[in-house]
Length: 114
Image (cartoon, rainbow, N blue to C red; front, side, top):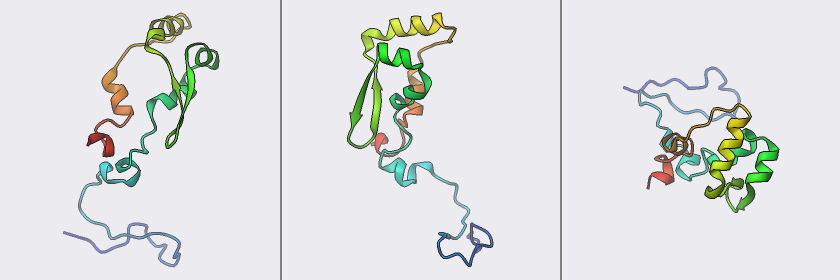
């Protein structure tokens, strides 16, 4: 059953707003343009710029650039154990969870699902 009221309430006099008819279908994140194109969510490796202290980024990582997704931090696998030890030494609780990383990276969404 489709209802015929505008999703964004009473702002009908503002032609700059987009309006769509409401429906009873659940929202499907995988149909959002940025997800379909693979532009969202951001690569997990870009989050390292926010999550890791600067001195560790400089010691263990290397800033890389992609044409479409911007900068990301490349940390070589052969330095992983050293980085984890350094983080634990600073009081961080660090575990490896590839499934969580893949989920945060959008694995299974949009273009990545193909």
